[in-house]
Length: 349
Image 1 (cartoon, rainbow, N blue to C red):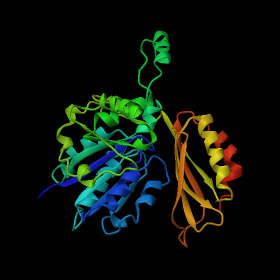
Image 2: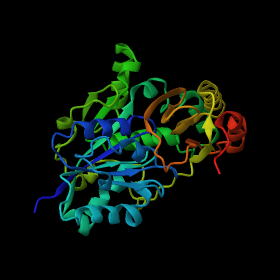
Image 3: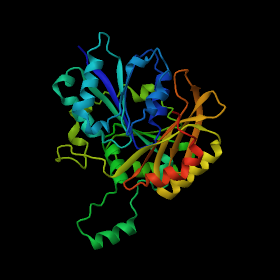
Image 4: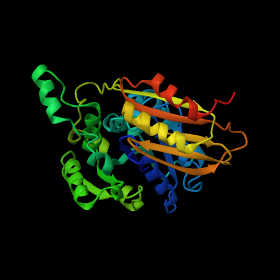
């Protein structure tokens, strides 16, 4: 019996993974897809955004959410039972797509496909690393070389990688293809430099594909036939030899809860101020906007905030605002909540 191909989509917070998956669902071309979506935080924003994109290609029963922490740290407890559930179905999916948390390391996940219960029935068709071209151009993942030199002089044993830089290297180092997303936000010269930066972190032969809004031909993403689980040695990792030990003590996350927001502009101004003041990496979630029948999806990456209405609130859904906030360790939750309390609205009873 042939193995079910599985594509792992990785990439840092806000790179556009969910947008890419929505594009795949809307252009499935007859494939029956199953999604495993992993989020760093307790609110399933990404799974909500992909439901209904193409019910024929991916019914809601085939969208499975893992929200107990990064998938790379919960392989045995969460990922393997989820994969077995999909593979044990009377009619397994044609293709499985796994969207990792933006903070996940892909190699431990790929390694899990060597487990006996999975190895004979599924294979990693390819690891796709989605990269935000504008964030790379802004130096989001680069170490301050002057500060690094000063720190090394003071402490020769210092680990040279920042948490962001290490994640960037891990995700690119495991990739079979890199999708350079949001290329519309940078000019041609900057984009060329970004491609050089990305290429320096990838393995020989890995293709880099440019994209706007995650629009990549499904034929390019699915059907790579990499069998990545058989090629682990070429995918170098910072945790090689450490029993895949990996934690997220370098990052904090919490949820901003509110009710109906009366003034979206005031909320956006407030968020931008707090993002700048506290170096917030990512904000995402749903906003209940007063007087509007549809929920507002809000996505923030660094200083960039986008928002759009995606669907009407369901009758049984409480009209409430929930925003996941992610930042580096030491994020001042109390200060951010206090600053935004006046614009988030009262939490519904």
